[in-house]
Length: 122
Image 1 (cartoon, rainbow, N blue to C red):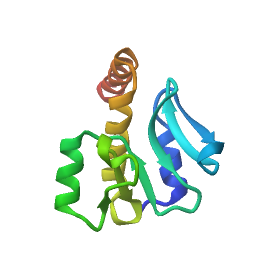
Image 2 (image 1 turned 120 degrees about the vertical axis):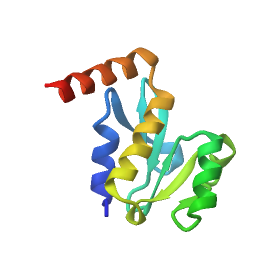
Image 3 (image 1 turned 90 degrees about the vertical axis):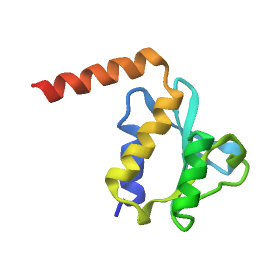
Image 4 (image 1 turned 60 degrees about the vertical axis):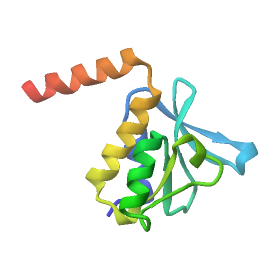
């Protein structure tokens, strides 16, 4: 079961990911790649809000409505709240990576994939 610390580490482990605190949102930590947001995680929150496609959002909410929630303000854009204590670290990591991939520039994603492939081949 991932902790808030684990979630932050997963978010920041992706290439060019950075935490940006937004004062106007009550000092809300957001996670961005090249100034584009792919996640939000509140201090002491039990959910992480992740960018997703509307199709993914609908499928997840239908499949497990107690784990995947529609976040206020962001749901209409396909984002999803994930109760991270109710998913495995592996599943959460995949959802975080998907959110990052939807946001990161194509060449950053391509370099990331090439690096991972090289590491697997070694």
